[in-house]
Image 1: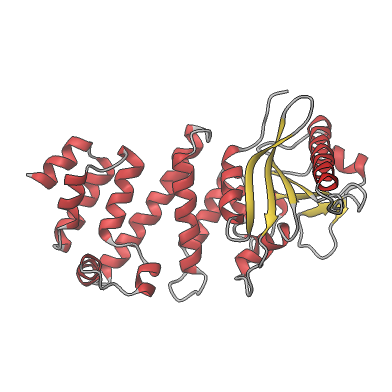
Image 2 (image 1 turned 180 degrees about the horizontal axis):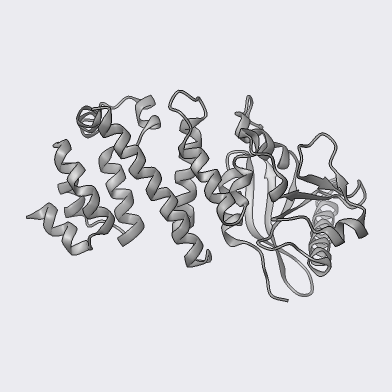
Length: 315
């Protein structure tokens, strides 16, 4: 059977859950024929307190050891049987390891299936119902099966579901990224959400398993975010002072968290398009303090070749 799991969604899930738990991507499930769970998540020993709204739902998803399968298409009966087989094989393996070590065997863990739409036929056959205490779009079977579902196209468009909507395919994912970019500066969630978006961009950039069209689409969104931030800084007339403070090591911690400096932005754009910037060119870029010259370099970094950029900075 062709594997239809969504590599980009796995990478997004890995970055969302990272501050909340230990996450193993594509965890091998020991069996006669090797198989892999998309994610195996084990909560941190000391769970974070006072989570922001956008991390409350992800935190609940990984509040106990959990198995995740992420799909780019709606799974059918055969897909769900494969999912259940992974769940039971992994539970059997964990039980064997616990007995060998003289530890108690844990109860069956929840398996979360993340699907772009509702698997209507399977839901009817397996008597899947709305999950009590969860918002719209969350479903489960029963205590015996421990099968849970997040139906992405049924999630409400709220701050609580914002990160989960990054799993949505196509335009819905773009809308979630755009929603992050529109968060006002005064919003206390803005800095952390922008940091998460930048971590995702970097993770997707280096994950060659993510299809090229999805990688380039995600990178385009990240580049638009960077351009918008550059323009905002320039319009507020803060570019010169902020850049000089960064170069002298005087930029305050809260400022560094709130915005990306012009040099950092240009470096990031170069890395997205062309790879690692040579040290000689990087040094020439870092030495520029003229705001107008930095502004003029933006178009070159977005569209020029590596040779064009090197000539412009080293000449």
